[in-house]
Image 1 (spheres, rainbow, N blue to C red):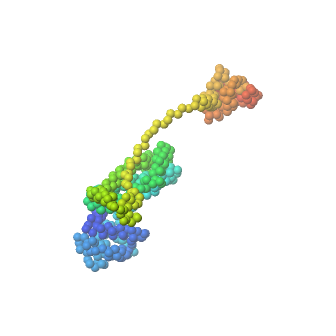
Image 2: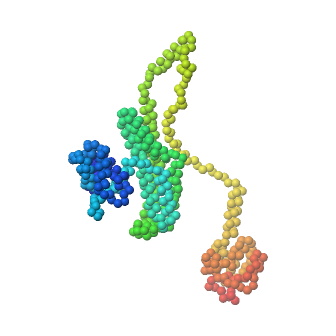
Image 3: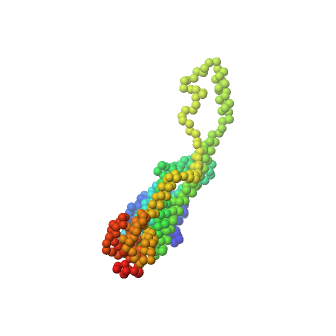
Length: 464
């Protein structure tokens, strides 16, 4: 649980009347005073930093229920005790010198609060490339880079969280805009918070030419291939066990499969989150466009006044004495700026593949090629069938006694001299091969003679 690691009064300064000052001071100490310090800072230096920061704040914004002393030295000490008692700061002595540092758990929480305060946007391209790079590294070298798979799953979770928070932030700003009664304040919220902070910095990234999602198919393909490869999963699991990050091989394999499945689920289900973001953007743009359209009151007398002016001009005896650049019929200067509502992307229609009719000559060629490959391919079954036909009831037969009738039999006959080692010695268990005096010359092949005999029968007769 969270509160078993944090101090009981840790959130008290952030819920007090002076919470704005306390939060700003904590962030100042975290970012400026103690950010790059390897060793704990001396207490005197920290008190001086607190005093300098508090000098720019009024007494009312600093004080809580208890009254702070007006003396600057005593006031900074009171503020320091406030954070020590709450559990944010830890004081100890090193060589009789008091030093101060952040509580370890409180520092982790403060880092998240600092990131939230900065409102930093997530680089979608960087997040997707982190996942892809870590995944490819783990797949290419599972024995030494198994930790990269965990990093890829963690980066995928972080990336999904930011995409979901983007839609949530947009909905939150939408509610604030709709509740705002002042139109100027509503427009300010729309352009400053919505457009500048989210629509430009985050949402626009998803619709650029170099869309980071172009790597999504590579991630899905790589994770799916790894998940279907039992040897790769086992290699990653063995690395987890060897690095003491899994108790046994079964637990390691479960963890590897869980990480790969999580990466697949994140990047295969991103479309639903992006559709939610698109809905919020389109809805807000329609509302702002409607507000702009009805912002000015309609002038019901404009048409009557224009008609009266044209009648007066037409009834005049002579042309009016007007400057050359003035004309009642001239259109407004400048380019037209007409609002075009955002159109929804049309769904992709599935078109059936056209039926392809092959040329009969091509089909005949394919069939003939397959038949040629069948006739010229030697298998253990074809050799065994050939030998059984030639042997008949005899226990053995010499190569010079085998009659070769056609090309099909010649293809098999020329491989008989390798029967003892052919196909990893499979046929050597059924037939024995031995040399014989003389030569084979049958018009197809000229080679030393040989004897093929069935195993366990007639081998002595064959040798004789």
